[in-house]
Amino acid sequence: MARSLPEPEPLRALIDALRRLPGVGVRGARRMAYHLLQNDPDGAVRLGDALRAAVDGLCHCSRCHSFSQTPVCAICEDPDRDASQLCVVETPADQNMIESSHGYRGLYYVLMGRLAPLEGVGPDQVRFAQLLQRVADDQVREVILATNFTAEGDTTAYYLADMLRDRGLTVTRLARGVPSGSELEYVDAGTIAWALMERRQQ
Image 1 (cartoon, rainbow, N blue to C red):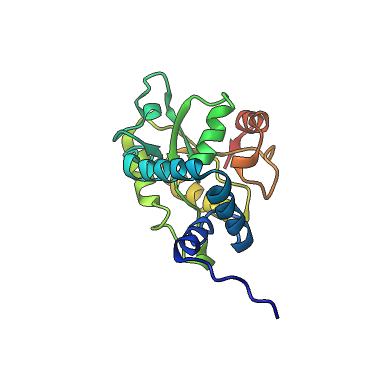
Image 2 (cartoon, helix red, strand yellow):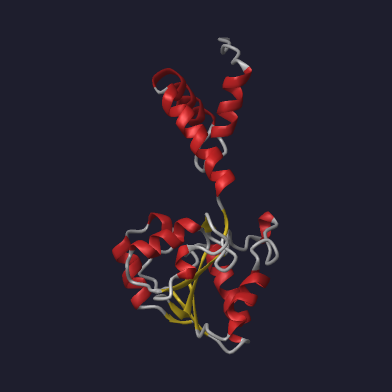
């Protein structure tokens, strides 16, 4: 039986770090590590520096919870945004996709996750209490639930809809122009714009 060569500890640590990326297994992480070290060592250093700068230089916006360099992000500070609409998304990547559709001019709240009871992710982990505080400012009239059309995203939307309707808010959900089982990060901007226009009351 052929034996694989033992990997030096720094290489093994790099492979383990790359495996943290979504969809990257051991073989993919090993390929990336060897490519960076063999073909692009300057790029590897830049990648490390950029990751460190992002971790050290970013915080969560105190209003929408997305990533920001300042306590309140530029979108939340923008006086031209419609403060009566609040779009709830799972991740900053989903927020970015909705922004790129140019079909929405309201504000956001980023959950940084979704309900997943089998994985031990409940309302506390997804910061539902902070969302309820956010909508209690008497400016928000409509909450648009833009969670992903997955089982977990639908569960999150149903749970939030009940909580928010109890507070007298209009609750809508993205129309099913977004394909079932898809994640917003991978949906084209035109489809998202249409789904926003065709949203319905939840």
